[in-house]
Image (cartoon, rainbow, N blue to C red):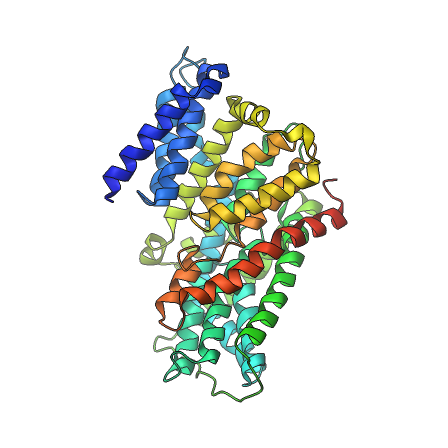
Length: 454
C-alpha cells in the first residue's frame, strides 16, 4: 500500500473518530481538534506512512493551524501560537543535542572504538565471556550515544570475528546480544532514548508533579535495565548453548588519520566534566540542559567537530522528540487526557494494576510502531488515568517502551542485527517475548522499592 493511501486512510479514520463517535460530543472544540491530531499522528506512526520525524513536524504544524488562531478554540492572543513552535527549543531537546555532540566528539577522536576494543579484550576469548563483554560495552555506550550508532559500531567491531560463522549459534548469540544490549542501554540515562525525555517533559506539566533530574533517572532506570541485561545474557547462553570454547577476538582497528592529542584530551575531559555535572546537578542546581552547552560550545568552537560532522548529527530525532513533546502538551492542555481518562474504568482498578496494564500496552504498541511514538501517545494519557501515581506510570511507560524487541522491525538495533544475515525472525520472537513479559513486572517492582513516587 502506497504511503499516500496510508496517509489518506489515517486522515479519514482520525476525522471520523473526532467528529462522528458519539462520545466525542462531550469534548470541547479544542479537545476535539486535539483528538484529531492525536489519532492522525498515531495512525501515521503505526502505518509507517511517513518518517517518524515528519510526523513530529506535522504535529507542530497542525497544532499551530488548528489551535493557534487568536480568539479561536484555544489561543487567546496573536502570540500564543509561538509557544507551539517554541517546543523546538525545549530544554530536553537541547539536552539530547548535547548528548549527540558528545557522541560525535567521541567518534571524532576514536574514544568510542578504543573503549569498546579495550573492554572486549579484557573479557577473554570464550564465547560466554565475550558475549558478556560485548553486551556490557554496548549497554554502557548506549546510555550516552544513540543506540543505532552504538549498534553500528559494535557490529563493525564484531564483524571480523563472525567471518565463516554465518548461521552458527555463537554468531546468532553475539549479534542478538548487541541488539538487546543497545535497546536496554537506553533505559539507563535521561539522554539514552527519547521516551525518557518524553516522560520527564510530561511530568513538568503536572501540578506538583515530581521533577526528575539526570541522576534521578539513573536511579530509576539503570538498575532494572542492568537486571534485564543480566537476564538477557543468561537467556542467550541457554538458548544458544554457549560454552567456554575460545574465539579469536577481532583486531583493534588502526586509525589511518592521526588525531591531535589535544583533541583527545579535550574530548575526554569534557566528557567527564559534563557527565559529572549532570550527575551532581541536584547539588549545584545547574539545569542539565544548560550543562549540555559545555560540549556543544567546546567541540564546535575548537573545530573538534567539523562542519561535516555537525551536519551528520541525527537531527531527525530532535524533530521527533519536539513533536512528541508538542503532542503531549496538546493532549494535556486541551483537556483531551481527562476525556480519555473518563472513558476508562480506572476507578474500579487499583492504581498499580493500571500502571502494569499501561506498561504491557506500551510494550505491545512499541513492537509495531516507533517506541518514541508509543510513549508520546500513552504517557500523557496514563498520567491522567493514574493521577495518584504520575511519576511511577510515566517512568514505567518510558522504560517499557525500550523493552519491545519481538520483531526485527521493532527497533533500529534489531533491524541492523537482522541485516547482518545471522539472525531469523524467530530469534527475536523468543528473546523479545521473555523480555516483554518480565520487564514491566521488574520495572514496577523496582520503582515501588525506591518509593520515590509512591
